[in-house]
Image 1 (cartoon, rainbow, N blue to C red):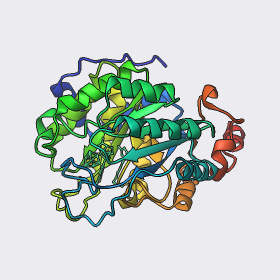
Image 2 (cartoon, rainbow, N blue to C red):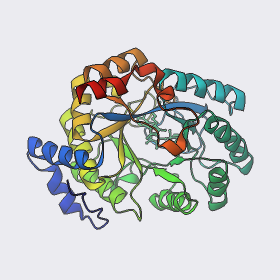
Image 3 (cartoon, rainbow, N blue to C red):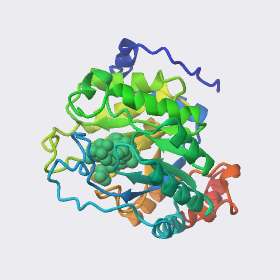
Image 4 (tube, rainbow, N blue to C red):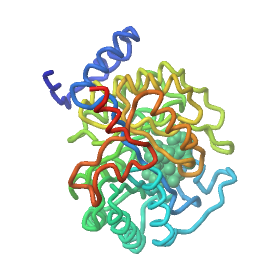
Length: 345
Ligand code: SAM
Ligand code: DTB
Ligand code: SF4
């Protein structure tokens, strides 16, 4: 199978034309691209922890952690390194290979970055990949995190440039692009995606994916979130996105960004198992695993283990360079997938 060329010159019309393909045609094309670049049975498994919750000065219209909305989320200060490491260890024992730490900051202070750098080094020493999402970052702060051993920085574009101003007013799209540039310059991998179901049009969904694909380097990880409507936020009453439109968006992301790992991110708890299965067929190959995202719920771990078994999926292996322990140790919670694969071959 010939690998697809990575393009950075997608037009909005070309992306919209992919969205407009007949559903089965789109899924066939996306799955063909998926198989050319990825093991279709392997799904990357990340666990998320909110290391600093609530009290954020930004006004992101979807967010439970913005101080200005009355969402009932209790603000909590930055967790201790020991407490974070204990949660990372438990996540690893349950089968996660990457630990993602999120903080409700507009941008961290240097002393916050120093503390997060300690967390990163300690989690990395467990043999897990690390990801953090801390808001806007300077070039020096990105370098500090890279030196601590950080693998990924999550910073989402969230939506199309022409819709962003309707969702967030306390920063500009360009601020997000600047932080992404600092992250790339530091040699970190980028985790960058968006949210569906905020009232955007299909053309704007195409605009988000077009912007992601045309970045100077396509993000290694692309989280596609379904809005979790939070009472008290401006987007609490948003119309849910049609599940098939969600699947189409995953499929178009897969075609545009053939090598990226596409994460079926927030919203799985609200999503039917069959829709999730379609997302995996369309090219999603990463999930958040563990019963909580940052402030909202996620499917029960046992349910996800059974979903993997029912769909013959297995956790994606870490790159050998990432492993502090033999392969398989990171997948304790998911059983002996390697044998099952070998038997079937
Ligand atoms: N404060 C940092 C920032 O905004 O970059 C990091 C944390 S922020 C919560 C990370 C991402 O979570 C957001 O960019 C957004 O894409 C996603 N997110 C937040 N609330 C959400 C919700 N209610 N539904 C779906 N996705 C959400
Ligand atoms: C991302 O794209 N989704 C995650 C992660 N990056 C940090 C966050 C989802 C948050 C869902 C709402 C909540 O739990 O507060
Ligand atoms: Fe703050 Fe991030 Fe929530 Fe926006 S998404 S309000 S920056 S925590």
